[in-house]
Every structure is written in structure tokens, then in C-alpha cells.
Amino acid sequence: MKKISLEIAGKKTEGFVEKVERNIWIHVHGKTFIAEDTSTKKRVGKHAVLNPHEIRAAMPGKITAVKKKTNDPVAVGETIIVMEAMKMEYSLKASMSGFIRTLSLKVGEQVTAGQLLAEIKEEKNEKN
Amino acid sequence: MAKKIKKLAIANRGEVAVRIHLAARELDISTILLHSEADIQSKAYRMCDETICIGPAATNESYLHTERVIRGALSKGADAIHPGFGFLSENAKFAEECAQNDLIFVGPSSYAIQTMGDKISARAAAMRSGVPVVPGYDGEDQADETLLKEAKKIGFPLIIKASGGGGGRGLKIARSEQDFFEQLGSAKRESQSAFGSAKVFLEKYLDHAKHIEFQIFGDSSGKIFHLHDRECSVQRRHQKIIEEAISPSLDTETRNKMAKDAIRIAESVHYKNAGTVEFIFQDGQYYFMEMNTRLQVEHPVTEFVTGVDLVKAQILCAQNISVEWQQEKLTTHGHAIECRLYAEDPYQGGIPSTGKLGSCLFPEGPGRRFEVGFEKGDLITSYYDPMIAKVIVFEESREKCMDKMIQALRDTLIFGVQTNIPYLIEILNHSEFRSGQMTTQFIGKYFSEPLKPLDLTEEEKAFAKQAVLFADSMSISSSAEADIKSPWSEHWRFV
Image 1: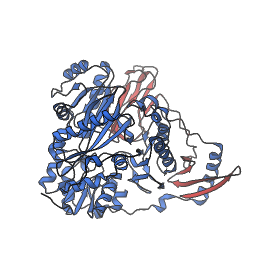
Image 2 (image 1 turned 90 degrees about the vertical axis):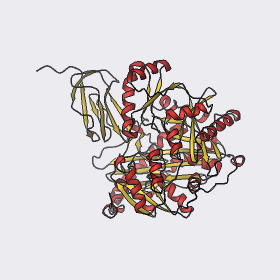
Image 3 (image 1 turned 90 degrees about the horizontal axis):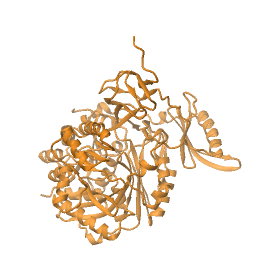
Image 4 (image 1 turned 30 degrees about the horizontal axis):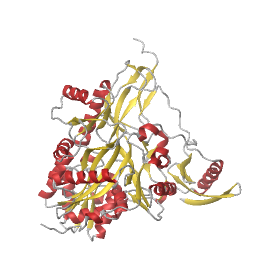
């Protein structure tokens, strides 16, 4: 970590900077943030817009309950999956109404961060 | 039977393991850290006099595995075990097994743990002692229909709690009859996985209550002291985030009554060592909630306002040495606040943020105390509670204390994982918190949404831009500096 002092618009500004793994971290004026993710060059602080069609695991954990199955109707706010991570249970709820398009999880299954757990679509699957 | 402790085994991790080590060192006692495979990169691992790996990362194969914990302690010649908080700290069977193996358990008797650890018998003890309790159902009949019938009797909303638990795990709120079975199932599963029992109890949910607790201490002489109160109303998912001593909400009369009741409950089980009697306080009325038969995470705020060292007192008590306090001299002065620093992303609703820690700075200052569990190069994993450190500050008044905390948090730097620092600062600036009127609904009411993305001034953006160029050119990578050799083979010996 380096402490740096820069003159910005005639004013002295002090802060800290360090590259940790792939990210460049900055602390200035009591604020800590990632200035840049060097692997993707993505500007952080701006998070990807969540796709309401997808239910993803926000962190690694274990599935403790599966409330729906493929083709079940769901309403906004309804619990689809319950998972346990860091010793707390988290209910993953639908952020749109529709029908379950895909969902093939078993209770007890380990999931990784970002893993797609279920998909919702507006229409019911067509019978085939 | 007084027995001197020469070697103390620490059956915990993180900042509390460090805290216990420091207390032991002041008492000239050497320490052995009983740790999991995942915790070889932690401050406690580096500080303790000896270490022994007792199992893999999963808690039920290491920190919760009583046999391995005891075997680990014995293999290194420990004569006592300090369980810290969480894990085995409120496990009556473990306390008993320690005794059977000639190990002093630094904590209360297994009888006290059993009576108070089970919320149902604790409630009964409170009722027998004439202490007010919240209406609820604590029966042995755990059939779904019975629970639903009782739930309707109590009325919604109501709380479903794991009867073996603490710290928010296995604790759910059912807002309506429709919601009841989902929450019940969830509470039972969490309870089963965290405490090995699916037994739950139901309780009326007081919806604008405060959480106020009394620190008590049962001396080896048999005398029970109280060390005044703490307020911990700022909670998220029933986990405390900010605690303070003393509560800004009690008048002297109520405070004295509660202190007497807290002592009465402790006396009912002939309590020895440190414990906390938790009350729920609403509209001037207080009700006994539960007793935690262990050291609390938030003990430092009490230490600041009373000037005692609770962990040292615990270790003395375990050796049958009296602390020689006098109740009338245990007064409080000033105000103390504690914030728990969690590795989580406040901009994404507080989801845990795991990874390797970069540099960390906890700048000391007058009235500041940092309890740190992890440092640069350490891994924050998803196996355990994501608490990295605690910040505690002390000032002459609550108002000044809040301002001091904000400054301490702004000075604190943690790289590598996101932390809840911005979230804590917003809470400390919130008018309801400032006024001292906050209830346990506070977070749900004002902070249920993720924080808005960080707002950087033009100046800060310009700084960031130049700093990035600087970092790229210097290529100051922390991973090269923090290359730690793996001592697993050395320490993995008996399991």
C-alpha cells in the first residue's frame, strides 16, 4: 500500500492506493472503493443491472429448500429457493411474476457465487 | 478447589481469540489456539503461544466438535479452555466434558448453561424469580398443528426462535397465518443445522421495542454483581451491528429495577462468571428475553464505561480467585459505542464479501479501541461469520461519542474486501439514532435497501484517476508481499 499526496485543482489531497489481486483499491476522504478491476477494466461502483429473469447465488452456499419446480407459477416476492451461507438462511425471491423455466436443484447441493439457480419467464413452457 | 491455570486453550477464532490471548498474557498464562484448517491465516494464529489444528474448516468438524476440541487442548497440556462466544460457549455438555477431562471451563456451571441456554427453562426461571416475561408458547409439544394453534392464541406478528440458539440463527418472524409454516420450516432447519435440535418456541413480537441488556458477573465468592446496561437496538436479521453503554433510554428507577431483576435471575442458577441478561423494552415496560451464559461480543463498551476487564475477571473466576469488587463502586462514566466491521457489500444489501485482505489500517487515538481478528494477507471465507474487527470508542457524552465513532470509521481502512463501514456511518448520522429513540425496527425501517452507489466528488474522482495510473506503474501488488508458507503439514497431527 502506498500513501500518496496529489495536488488536485490546487488543493492537496492525501489518500492510499493498493492493488489487491486484480483490483485497485483507493481510500480517500474516509471513503474506500475499487477504482478499477484490471481483469475486466470494468469501472466499479456501478453494479450490473440485475436481470429479473434470473435467480443467481450471490455467494457460495448450500441449498436448504426448493419451493418451486419447473412450470410452477410465481408472483413477485415469492420465495423460490432458500439457501444457507455463512450460517444464515437467505430466501431467494422472484423479482418478477411468471413461470419457472428452469430449476434443477436438490436440497443439500452446494452452489458457487454467481451460479444460475433458476430462470423465470413470462409464459408457461409449451408442452412438447 | 482452587486450581491455577498455567496454560489456557482458546476454542475460538477471530478477534475474540486475540482478546482472550491478551487477557491471559497479562495474567502470565500461556495460550494454545485450537483452530481449523481455514484459520491458519489469522491474527490469533500468529499471536498465540502455541497452536494446534483440530479439524477442517466446516464448524461441526472443528470448532463445534467437542471431542476434537478437548483432545487438542489435552495434547498440548492445557489446564483450561476459554470458549469465547458462539461455538461451544453455551454448550452445557461441553462444559461437563471439560470437567470430566480435568480441564477448567472458563464460564458458568453446566447447570447454569443448561437452564439459561434453553430459552424455555430460562423463561420459567425468570417467571419463578418474579421477573416479567413476554407472552409466548414454550411447550414440549412441537407438532405443527399445536404450534399453529398457540401462534393464533399469541397473535401475529410473532417470533419463532430456536430454543437452543442465540445470535439470530434459527430466529424468524411470522407476520401472518399464511406466512407461519414457511417461517417455521426455516427456523427449524436453521436450528437443526446450527444447534442440532429443531425445537422452537413462539413469542409475541413487540414491534417498537428496544434491546437492553445487563452485564452481570458471578464472583467466585458467590456474590453476583451487575455492571450496568448496554443498548443493542440496531440489529439486522437479529444480529447486532452497533452497541452502546449505557442505554440512552432508561430512567434511574427503571434501570435500578432491571439491574435487580438481572441479578435475581443470575442468582436463581447460582451463576458464576460473566453473563448477560437480555431484556426487551417497550413503552416503559421491560420483559426478560434470555440470558447469555458467556462473554458477549459487545463486552468492550461495558469495559470502557466501568473500567473493568471482563475477560481477565473470567479467567480469575475460573481459578476461584475473587475479583474483589464492590457493587457500589461499579459506577459508570461517559459513553461507549461499538461497531462491528463485517466483510460485506453495503451497496448490494450486505451480501458477504469474501477474499484476501489487502492492507488494513486501524489508526489509534484517544478513546479508540480496535479489536482485530484478521490482517493483510488473511482470507475472509464463507465458512464463518464475516466479522473482521470491532471498533469501540469512548467519550464523555453520547453525542461526542457518535462523532468520534464516525471519525474512527472514516480513518479505518480495509482493502481487499468490501466492508459495512459506509453503512455504519450512515446509521451514526441518522436522526433517529442520534436522538436515541431507535428500536429494533430501526434497520428494517430505514436501512432495508442497499446503500446508494458511493458518491464521489470531482476531486475524489480526479484523485482516483491519478492513483490508478500510479498503482499500475508501481505494480504494488499485495499478493507478493503476503506470501505465507503453509504450516498445515506441521500442525495437522492427531485428527
